[in-house]
Amino acid sequence: MYTNHRMARDCGSIYRLEPLAFFLTWTTYGSWLPGDARGWVDDRGVIRRANKSLARISSSIMGEQPVVLTTAQRHTVEESIHEHCRFRGWMLHAVNCRTTHVHAVVSAADRSPDAVLRCIKAWCSRQLSGGACGKRRWWTKGGSMRRLYDTRAIEDVVAYVVECQDRPRR
Image 1: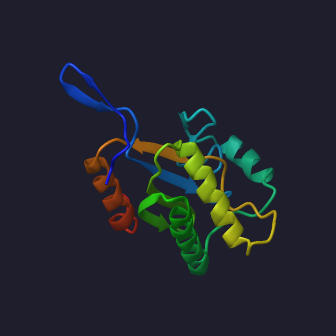
Image 2: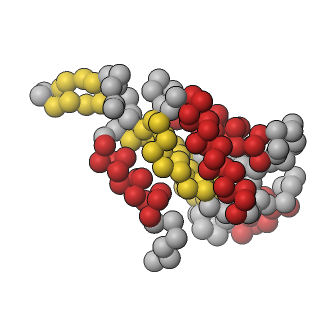
Image 3: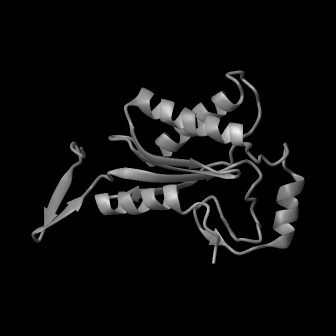
């Protein structure tokens, strides 16, 4: 199942140079702005603390209303991801579209997580916009892209994506 992944040996241990899969998470436009009370991630990937004035400024300069996906739109996103992964020959391990964010676990040999994320978001945007060249912004820029190097990590993340999204936070 997971062939074509380069490996190296060092002192008898095997280290995987390329990940088996990516755990991708991205948010809908306007749902998690810089300065957010929950904290936020800057352009360099650094987690930042809440900042009320920055949150106000971020909200005031938004070009469109925040996106909260409907049940039908969530279904469209999930179907689009399934379809795109089939089209590209990527293995989709799990997908879960929520009202304000999406999780996907994808194996895509010889692709960067950034390229996979960009392709999937673009495909979903086209489907949500009805194939039109609509200028609707569906997603925030970027997203979280974790590399998964072993089957146990994939299993754990798939369980989180499939089983843990409706659990209340502690």
